[in-house]
Image (tube, rainbow, N blue to C red; front, top):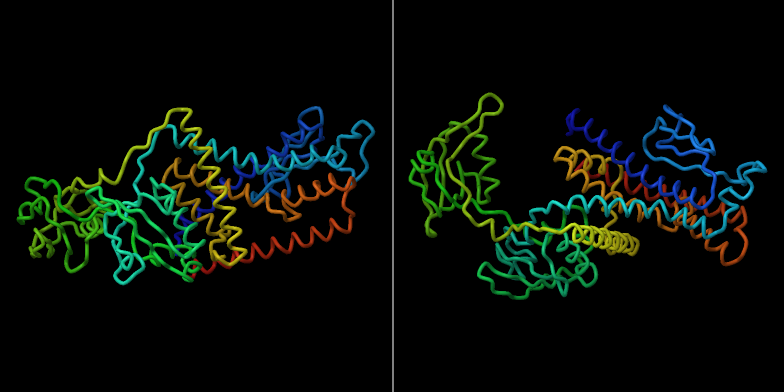
Length: 453
């Protein structure tokens, strides 16, 4: 259950994220609309009654912050909504050429994609530590086990797609799995030898696309360092108990701690306690009793065992550096590949090849927003980039109440030489509203299902 403070952080982060992305989207419409000679009546962030407003410019445009911060809009002059003053003739949205209207409608999603490029550019410029796609613990009798995957194997390629980080690897895995039910991998072991393996999931592919199901379903975890002893703290609990560098800690008080993160969690929770430690040396298990050290006080008190991580992580992490131009190119490439992946996944949801449980609603997005905000500005910026791409793709769907549907209307007019009839447009709007309500229903259902477990 979420604490009150976490819920508040999630809500505020969600409002900030939505406000930023909607402002960018609507600014695209606003800017290109003005360049196209349209008169802008109002630029609003949020819906409902304005809580702040000012008028500016030769057109006396209203700039507003509204009371419901869950969207926004640009209102252009439109002769279909009322008479146009003689001095404004030709400046209404529907009086401008079809090409100008299409450009204005496209500008909103385009600005979302441009924002993602800028966000990734900022994130890429300083360089970043990247974990290579490597196999962690293997579940017995799983797809991964049957394919012969081993702890520590690095994934060099998925099919013909070369992979260098987990993000590109996951995209390639999902693409291959959904397309054929098979995941062909090129693996590299710790000695540098390469081999091929195929995970054959068959008709189980759709189930494995459900959120959180992929790794558990395939039967392997993302690589993490084992709890192997590196440097020993002189006079520390482990050294005094006779543990040596190279030993592997197996359990503490019967609780498995094969991974370094598991070891840290168990030890930190037991400051000053005497515990039974099972460890392995040269393949032979041993048991020893030791008293953990401690540091800090009060709620910050935590246990210490006096060992350091064995120097194995260097083989699995590397610093990815870019020049200024390279970082911009990488940002554009990441935005492009993420956009194409989003479109493919949406298409496969329609055909049933990908689970519709991947559709997230505002509750789930708010949770992600809060978590990324708590982890720091770079994580929140990365979250904004992902949501901005999704927003851009969503608005390009050919649904009449969205930008994509309105673009379809303008293209039809461009081809036939006259606008669609009011009845046809009304019917399209009704279909579009129904489609959005259906989409929102799936999203809210998925959110509630995730909360209820």
